[in-house]
Length: 267
Image 1 (cartoon, rainbow, N blue to C red):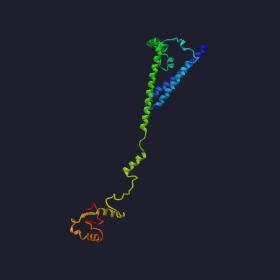
Image 2: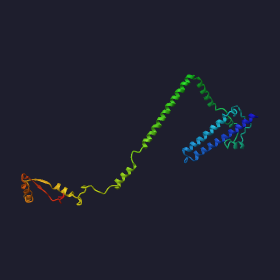
Image 3: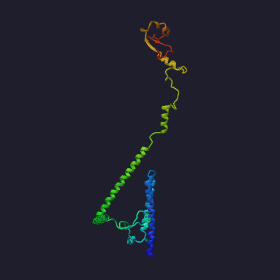
Image 4: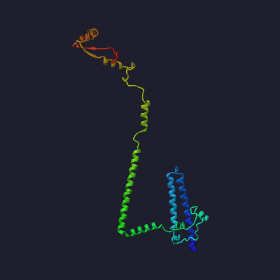
């Protein structure tokens, strides 16, 4: 009686855990089929985490020390009928309408398919043929391959992170760029003053500017012999002043001083 009571409690716990797992699967499948356009990756990860936790809880119940070995229990169908069974429909939520000879081998099977069972036996036989030293070498080789693969993956992640940092690093000052664009396009921040001599005409308000330009442009050296006759009376005063100075030789070069009001580029 005690074993039967323990088996009933274990089955109730298993049925409860399996029902929770089934509800989570149904909810997740519904999201994938109907809410795929609004589904986000964090929501998918949450669903997977919930399913993983429920599977771990189910395994803990099965591996508990008080759980009886279910593999030692035998299930025997008492009634087989090709007719529709409403109670089975309700228990299986419409998935199994009848409990006949066709569905019993699939639903009450405690072993895998014969093909799968044969492959499993072949793998066990191949594993038994390997010596302990050979198995250890294969384990070391597999661990080395996994280590190299993890190292390559880590290197790629570091390179991608460093590349992303280099691409995201700012190489200019937005404030200076905006100020330069505003100055070039709209003249913002530029001064309205002009430097002296930059314009086409000389302003009369600047002292000495007209005299310097006129004097520099009006000094013209011409030979004495090639000077026209009409310039002699204009230069007589200059020659008499040079001749009247004692101890100095009269200059053989005439200086033609033009009016300061004439612009050097006027014709």
